[in-house]
Length: 371
Image (cartoon, rainbow, N blue to C red; front, side, top):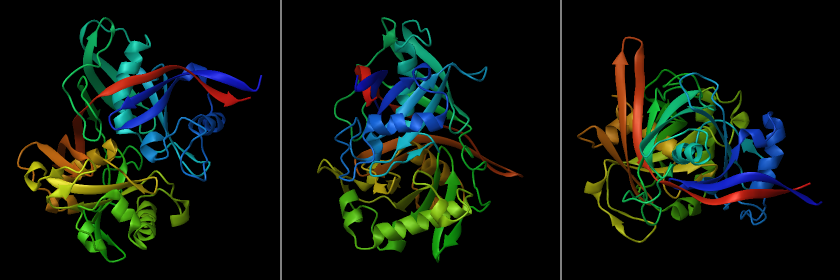
């Protein structure tokens, strides 16, 4: 037998896709899981396409999820996330994928891990990477998660059933602090920035400070001579300050992310339509795994929405939101996030953030790895 097969599901959650496993079907140690995930996703691929695996050649399509029994009393399931690099043999366990978080609840119900009556289900998810809780609410019909509905996600064709995700106390999941350096705003190599860890560590810089308007397409940003190398240097220096590596070289690929922000402005989207300035409160172009994201990573959007509520931060200066919700403009459209932040004598605290997504199972069966 030249190959063996591991039970798995292939699922879309929000604007990402990934391979979902039951914890019982994989080894317990992450070091033993990593070669399996590399094989399943098709990494490393020097051609950047992951043709010999389930990955799609970009960070949002090269992910894995492992679901198991809960290890804390206020949870229904444990959810472990793995980001798999495309062109190198790297599996990063830092941080969470907010988009794939939307598929965890439906997976738990459909796979019989959490019983649910018809109506609205609540699945309490322990996000293992960040040690935070996520509450997923979604409709159930016939004992299974409903997939039909009118909810839409920018960058995803069609519509689906709405899934509400409430991220509870999202601050400091990776670094231990909402503001890892203690500063609301600071400078790196002379450029103003805000470093925040809410949902995921992110370093926010002004697009204008790097010679951009903020409305450029991902391809245009990646084609700008010298820009991607400079952004990666800034990202690694930010990671050093955030305690994510002892040297810039030791800062991993997944955390922190770096983001370029700008005030609302008209922008041409990836589907060639025009996003008007009045349809957004702030604009962002965010990098993930050394590529400019075609939408915006959901956990990065949580960090941005949280930062927009912190007086004195760089995003707060650019954000035009009048109400509780913040409409984030990105290359595929907009994403609305409601963030709750409070200021106390001890500093700023992120209470929660809520967002709506859709999800669907695309394949159920087994994935092959060479024996």
